[in-house]
Length: 397
Image 1 (cartoon, helix red, strand yellow):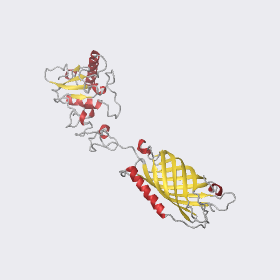
Image 2: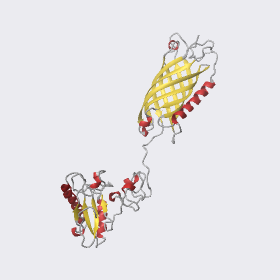
Image 3: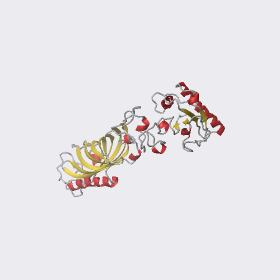
């Protein structure tokens, strides 16, 4: 009686199982729907190639054939980052063992599922790598017999490029044999494969934040939002006036101003105090150094303040320094005055007199964002002074 993995010249009675193939296809689609609930918004086509060595694990096949060569090609559709459908064509070739003349071949056409159990935890660009498990079932042609078969594999992919991953895979396969086929051994053919899984798919990038406004004022360039500052491009929060400052932090939510002034226009000679977030370091009164095109540099904002005061000869502005709430109050008061004096020195270099820009230091008494961010409290304010008015001595002004 012949083993059910037939040689090419097998003349056993054919047995066709088209209904089992259809059942396998339907089961794959149904399981995919159950696992995903609803299709992903963007579905990716993938392709797997799997060359392997096949080793028999049952009798009489382990005696009838030597270890064989297995090659599978699997186009697929990734429904999301965890679940995908796949269709397979696989070829198994097994040379004849000692004492036998005929080699054997089998052709597999099947459908199945591929699961990446940790796919949702991986970065989106690594959508081809990581641990995977798959299950396939369908039609098998051996010699002149039609049979039903299934296989399952476990592997791991190392993503070496955005569109390619490679890694080991071990697979178990079984070809089902009917118990009542004349001249055929009723035992199922069972084998395992040891091989490589080659995965191909589209390149994925990490999602970028939504851009608030692409019609930006000409200042600096940044990705995908020409001629605007980087903060505005990547803000990703409500910004009603589209100036790059989030609404909860914007002190002038209906007019445009730079982030360094909390969204207010640079108008030191207007009625409202102008806050400038000069980012002094901890326990320092030194102005931040110029760092090329770094949009965080305060110097361009201070230049605009100096320019505005120079254009209005009647304008006198008090420079008020502030400190965070670290350290003793008296020390912070002296530190804040030193910070105001550093900004005054910068203004004098731009052509203003000290009399037009007197200084004051309020220490840590006037916290801008109490107990939230000490960095924002290391700042200066510009307040216009009326004729004969002196700099304020408390937070009430």
